[in-house]
Length: 226
Image (cartoon, rainbow, N blue to C red; front, side, top):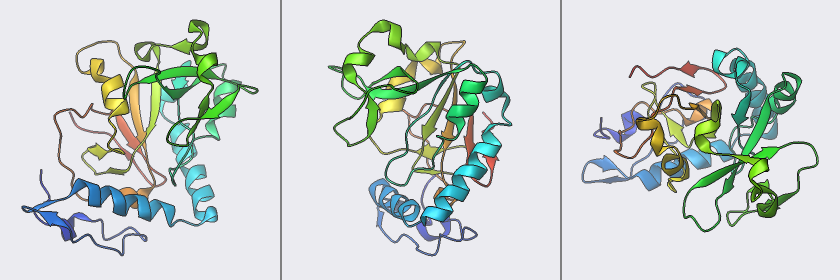
């Protein structure tokens, strides 16, 4: 798939999709421009729209068998307008599931630890300004899990399409951390989350993209046909 028609690529049905993208390089829409537009689109949502989107997202997620069965699940704390999965934390706790948060792994570039999160966990801000469990807490092996030991991972997206392709922030943290999932079984179920206004008609497949099992927004669930 390609961006041969960058204007047609944008979903015309989404209420927030009035702005079209015109930046193209050699017939292919520049991914940086696409990220910039989709991030602008989610940041433009009002607080009330974000609350309603989070509520609808979590309602859909609670119906997924991957989450109903999960006992070790990773999610993220929203940043930069990302859709908010935090209402699920109490639901997981009531089901006796353990919740983990991504932490920038010290001394290993662009990879993640997953550190246990509970009430009272000491938090800090990483170099991107995102809240995460304190590194000294995560450094204790008893407080974290290797990526392969998680049951389900909820990860943020910048954009997605109906074929289940997606783009992230461009740092490659999740792709590097879960590169093993291409060849290893069993592996965690990977579920991408986004506002529905971040949906586009078509995205390219990059060689380093780790396939997702599902993408969930406040309006739909996408199951890629692999």
